[in-house]
Amino acid sequence: MITKDQINVFAHRFKTNESTVYREYLQVLFLNKLYKNEKSAQVFFKGGTAIHFLFNAPRFSEDLDFTVSLSESEFSTLINFVFKEFVKEGEFTFKEIKTITGKRFLLTANRDVLPYATFINLDFSFREKVIEPNKSTFDTTYPVIFTSFIYHLSREEMCAEKIRALLTREKGRDLFDLWYLVSQGTKINIKIVKEKLKYYQKKEFTNNELINRVKQFSEKEFEIDIRPFIPMDERSKLKERFEYIQTYLIEKLSAF
Image (cartoon, one colour):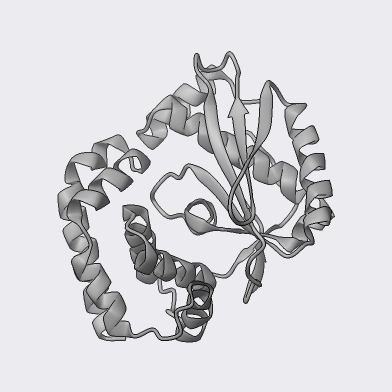
């Protein structure tokens, strides 16, 4: 397990607070426990934390999101085993939270490393099929050694899900993540985007619709949402960062 001194070192290195470091360490530890099990090859990591860990997006995240291709009974067997293995590491609890779709669990860490509890939401979706399954090796600076692949959505599929999120809610992290993926050369696959939007009964999608959404995005909402997830020395530059991201995306999408 990570020590208080190690947390302090990482907090200084990453220019963030101890709580963020410890939460991220626990996210890495959970992924390690999950993907050691062969059944986890049907549990696909996705979302902002996946973009951060697998593709080096420069922002922290708070939840772990997955798409599951197992039956609910198979998944229950797997996740209960993973929980049992995880709690051997320390004072951790897992509580199922009722949701309309999928499964959600709250991981709570009560340890003397920090003087307060740390929480992580674990979200598992069963509603859609994975279109482009991938697997990757994983290196981490935290004291966790991976010997198993992480199974995840492709860059293009994660990008499509970020576009869907951008069109259906207003969270700065979606704009940030879409900008990062596009800036790293990720292609926008219209076919995958349309497939993702079917879940919301939305049959049509145009590039202009996405451009208009980016143009209409609130600078205030962007700053409020993204502030806790970037290094402290970058928070004073959020207004300029928003303007840059918005302009960049409009230019790239207009040329698409």
